[in-house]
Image (cartoon, rainbow, N blue to C red; front, side):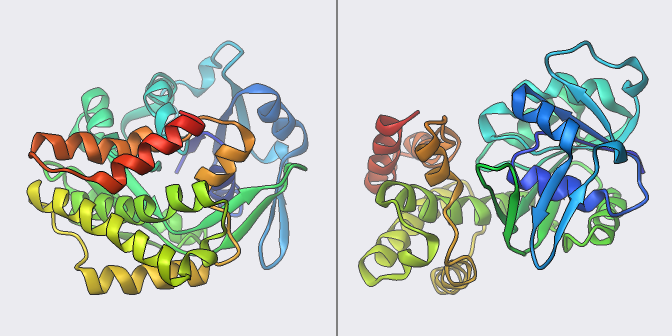
Length: 308
């Protein structure tokens, strides 16, 4: 299976490095000085043990250079591992590299990615994924894979979800612990609400995930869940009930206790955050149903005030 990965942030780098442990051909698309350095030096990931993806293991393409024609109609699967706000900008590259009948997978936080892919590639070639793997990049460029989790895959209800079986097998071959989820909207919303409840609070407070387990902050996380779950119900989407969500939240915070969430990393680095596709997007959706989400609204406004 020919694999292409667009976007080599921390999670994209983990996926790419794991794909490199298989025998499948690999194409990585990068941009900027950081992308050029990876193409020269490879990608080093620290987990239980350190390993490096040597640059000669894969084919590299660069946003700043002309498209390599030999990679056109090449990939059986394209993973878009960018930030939420860059998914749309990645579609042109994905369209160039994916072959007829191949699948494009968006692995990004927030809402709307499946709809974005379907509008370009149709129902049968579009998929979304969520992950509980945790990683961050050190200033040296080394990626710390600090929380090993899993990957869930799904497609539009109008597509044949069984067509994802080869991708599930690929991800499991790469050690990424994948499963297929047959209810795409529930899958996306369960991960979304977890991010809503953790990321902006940790980012504004400057805390690690584990520090959110303190009584007052944990209660605030749960209130974010309650607001957002009302929107899911209005959309007729089944999400975890309060007890199950609380148990999942505690498990995730304990398993990633030393992690700084991606939104906190973005604020510290002065980068654009994903708040527009997360809490803000849910607030906008709530307004269509006549619902008020004061806590989510406040969190979205404060994150945007720090950095859009």
